Structure formats: structure tokens, C-alpha cells
Image (cartoon, rainbow, N blue to C red; front, side, top):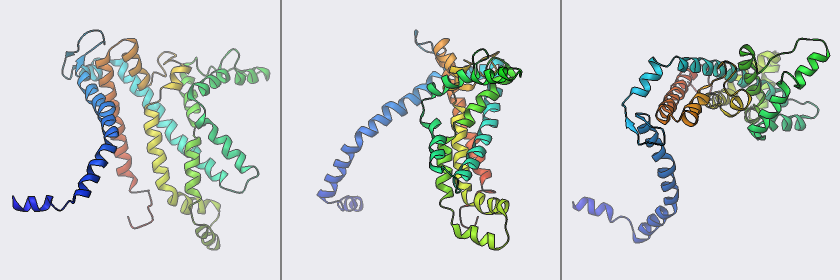
Length: 305
């Protein structure tokens, strides 16, 4: 008891005053975190175990919502297929395209600053505006792309009205909006020492060898970062698919968050929607862990692995 009292007495009155003052300053953030983050999370977890429609009190069901999704809801697996298809194609292609564009914009090309600004524009334009532009471009009747095809006597492409074209069209939009990833890659490329490229050139390495053995290894941590961030964003894609297709045609673009939104705000199945949210959380965490575990074989951090 004496030892503990002696340990507490090490704090001077000024230090105790500073501690209380610090707690006062940090308390708004702590309260906001508890009220607007922790409480909604715990509420969502509870509602995922209930039948709740916002109009009547929740009825506890246990894990029935989860069991229904996995075993009695065939539409859920169609949504999972659509989402995994979209994520599996758009994320790797988006990262690859962003990386290649960043390498091009990192070289001495005419109008480099202009092109850097143009590439970044999709990242600062509101998603609603981008969706409206793409809806105009891809429309079957008055779309600009099909207008050009029609002018040259070529068959039109039903980008958003054909189940076979709808997902690739949304993937194209996702790849187009990679401006933020391009900027991050540019920052990483400018940190690669020029001396390494000069040494590789002296050793007889051509452009491909320098790209493969210098550029890729030294920017691999940024590739990993953009890959994980792209994965998280793609699993939660909602605005553009909802505005362009609303899950159609024939549920071919009914992605996970579109399905969650429909259950929550159209069908008022808040319990099922909460269960969908927690399943999505576990899916994203699982994919992130797998990528992190496998990254040790190809990510270079500048030291011994």
C-alpha cells in the first residue's frame, strides 16, 4: 500500500493539472467516438440478431438472420458473385492502370502538369456528377459512344441495359476514377533514387529490366496500400451502380451495398441489413489479412525480409 502511494505521489500538482486539462480537451472527441461510432456499432450488432423494421420493437432471433442469408436466401449468393466479380476485376486492373499512368506521368512528357491535373479530376468530381456523365455517354438511344458507333455504321453497345455488359461497364467507370491512386503512385515514384536507374543502365539493363527490378520493388509498399484501399472501396461501392443501373438489368449489378441498402430502406428489414453489414465487415477483414500475409513474398521494405 505504501509503495503504491509513493508511486502516485510522483505526480506533481502541475502534472495533475495538466492531466485534467488534457482530459477536458480530449473529452469531446472521446464522447463523439463513443456516441457516433461505438454505440452505432454495438446497436448494429444487436439489431443483426433481431427482427426489426423501425416501426415495431425489435424481436430477438439469435443467429437466424445469418442462417437465413447463408442457407435460405439464394439471392444473397448472386449478390456475392456480382460483388466478388466486380472487386476481383476492377481492383487489380485499377491498380495496374493507375501504376502505369503514374509511370508515364513521371517521365519527361510535354504537358505533364496538365495531364496530371486531368487524371486527378475524377477523384474530386462528386460521384453523382460522374454517374450522370457516364449515363449520358453509355445510353443506348442518345449516348455519345453509341452515337459515334451509329455514325460509322457499327452495332450499338447496350452498356447498361444488357446483363453481359453491365458489370464490365461499371468496372470501366471504376478504372477511370483512379486519380487518387495515380497521385499516390507519383509521390512514391519520385522517391525512387535516380542513382539506382543510372547504375542499372550502366549494367546494361533496358527499360523493362529497370521497371521490373527497380521501380516495382521500391514502390511495392505503395502498391500494397493502393490494393488494400481499392479492395475496401470496391466492396462498399454503391453510388455509381445505384445511379446507373439500380442493381439491374436482371440483378446483374446488384452489388453487396446495393442489396444492403435495399433491405434496409426499401424493405425495412433492419435486422437483416445489420447482419449483411457485419458479414461485409468480416469479408473485408478476411481479405485484408490474406493480402497482408501473402505480401511478405513480394513487398520490399528496404531491409532484410
